[in-house]
Length: 258
Image (cartoon, rainbow, N blue to C red; front, side, top):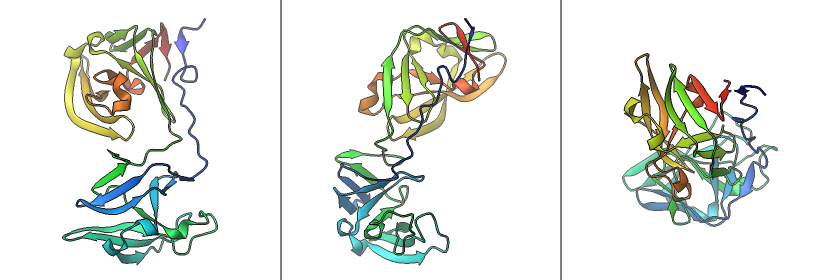
């Protein structure tokens, strides 16, 4: 038996699903600017190509808050977008909405009847009665969180930083599997909290740590979710390591090769 574990054997990437690219969303979706509802619909379509976007039927958009801006001179796969400003009283989100008046043959056949909004330009996005951050949730994107008895050991500069036989493994479409480890199994004295944070529409807001040993310091290679989304409570307050940036990671005694 080999004493090494390749990425293909365990840390393999779950393949993403690329089709279809235009799908109906069963959820009620709302978008707001300065507490004003700009669009509210139970007939939203989701564009799954990057960047993902919700498209609202024009009948479910408050058109009085939109003002035509310009027709883009650059065409994407679906045509030349017509951009619009979104205005609610004193607040203006410039070029924050768009539609396709003359779509290409590659665009969905019904795209002319829809309007999309720049995610970050809006103040609030809701799916049903829950706020959604970062970008739309993709129904083809799956996360499985499993308790495990695998033996996981994290080593930096020859020193064991974390070791456990009860990790929680998070499997996420399109990403490598991640091991979440309880803090009692981690050398917390070697972790330094940083101001860095990231947001995930599925998991929530992550806080980061750097690792400082006698040899060197590794910035933002450890993260935790202190207050994850309710569906992700299995990983609450556990810590995970960027295996790609760590010296040595052992899974059941086998060294993970980079």
